[in-house]
Image 1 (cartoon, one colour):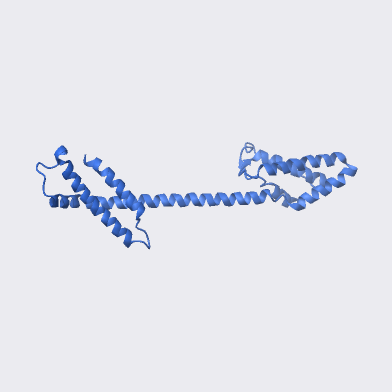
Image 2 (cartoon, rainbow, N blue to C red; image 1 turned 120 degrees about the vertical axis):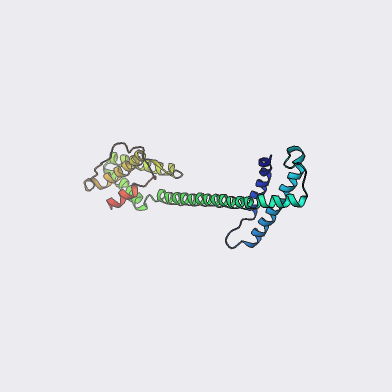
Length: 221
């Protein structure tokens, strides 16, 4: 019965800490509010003892209210302040977790913004060069122009599909890179030589979409 009585009192104390937390720059008012609630809980505890004593039998003969109040103060004051400290620890831990979640969300938003910028950054110079090369190839090498158009279509379609994707398997990024290099290979001919060296078992590794194309483009430039 004594333990069950603590449940509503503890809930009230936790509410008080959440409503009036003691924190830097904001001490006096919350401290006064906490003191008032603690004294109120001491009184409630004493009143509950007197109210339930006929059924539970804490005392053979009910003592005076003042005596029960003093006993409640002596028995519960330190415990209530310890509970206030524990409640503040829980509150600060929850706030720290919330700040961590907000920081993670901000980092994710920043990563998304960077990925969107990267996705939108199929370099205009590359696009112009590819289209100009296709226009030239159409007149003297229709097959090469056709291969460039197919590769360019795959590259653009993949970049559009990945605008809302944070990561893709490495094999998909490599397939996209092959399309890009196929266009450059036709455009540059023998001036461009590509060697592939891929470790085994990395096909499913997650990577940001369109992360390799700018590296390859810079290398070609």
